[in-house]
Amino acid sequence: MKIPRLEGETCEFKQSLSDTSSIVETICAFLNKQGGAIFVGVLDNGEIRGVDVGRNTIENISRAIREAITPGKAPAIEVLQANGKNILKIAVPRGEETPYFCRGKAFIRLGKTNVAMTSQEIEKEFKHRLSLERTFEDAPTNIRASHYGRSALEYFRANGREGTRSTGIEKVLDNLELEKQGKFNVAGLVCFGDNPQGRLPQFSFRCGVVKKGELISIDLIQGNIFEIIEKTFDYARTKIGSVFHIKGAVRRTTYEYPLEALREAIVNSLVHRDLNFPSSNYLAIYEDHLEVKNPGELPSALDISQLKQEHPSIQRNKKIANCLYLAGYIEHWGTGTTKIIKLCREAGLADPEFSQEHGFFAVKFWKKPPFNNARQQSAAEFIKKHGKVTSKTYSREFKVSERMARLDLSAMYKQGFIDRQKNGRIVWYMIKK
Image 1 (cartoon, rainbow, N blue to C red):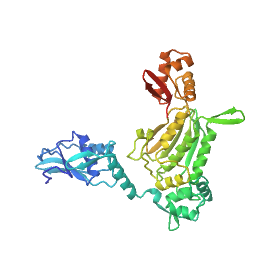
Image 2 (cartoon, one colour):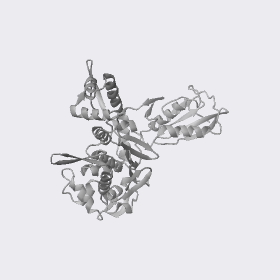
Image 3 (tube, rainbow, N blue to C red):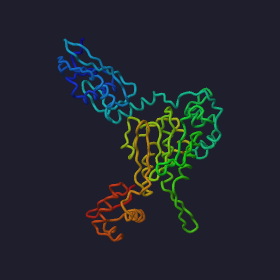
Image 4 (cartoon, rainbow, N blue to C red):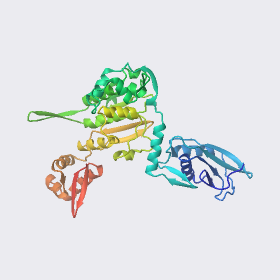
């Protein structure tokens, strides 16, 4: 077996398998450039040393690659003979789903070095991939666009943006690219079809209430995307607890969870779901929390930690997202999760939890306020009313020592409900924006 004499943009030598981290990093870099080959058992100068190959060697390498590289890509691994010694060749093709990430970081091959990609390079590759990618929402159906649901058009027009409220169905479908040659694609069917579940039974919301471990209420919500959003939201609103407040002639209702945040979570759940995954979306109401869950994890370019701050909007279903944006169901791209967090904080609740597991993404709302005692709950209301406090003000208002005041305020700060700002020797505490 003849191997290249020198390392370069498409060739890397590794003395042994001990540095698995460097090997998978190089695979990532090759995938993001023009591909290449890694030869294990070869020194940097090209001298062949050989490598021990056991019964599970290739399986172990494959597992390490699978665990480190996203999107998943399995290079060809083979054992070769060179100068009477075993070497491993890992052949890496040019990736078709760039950018690829190695443990959350993208690399590219420059000469014989792996270099971390800049955020601009990653964004460029992602836009290029999305422009070429044919998503499931683009898949054609045999359902004629003339069989549209009139309720869907009414929802679309009701709160639509300027220029959409008097638009006819033919123009809507054409402008949003929801039909071709008179037939719906999948996006058009779920948005405007009169019976989307005839083709996509998984496009639905399963809602339930669980008390003491028992399911006491269950409902399957179907229809077009507008009907599902409205009916799921109504289900949640009528099943969660509420309190009436009368002030003068005005009666106000306060719910256990901020309704606007729940609505946002329901919309996001449908917009970002994997349409091809054979499962419904879920809304489950428990005694101490509420959970909204959809099939389809985050894109590889995003991780959970980024959802609590401003982040790029990467839409799995661009046509559906655009339809809901024009219909007034989405305000701004990439702000859904931060808006949900803000609304929960304003309601005096703990930050929602975002998680993903077994192919599902979930948002969990906690009913219980994030405070250790009733005094802290009262303090939260006091801070919301007055804007900001010091430990001295807190101590005087709630008749506790300044040390206890600092402990209470510190606990509320660590939970994320309040912010603090130092002005000379004085520390102010205020509601987190």
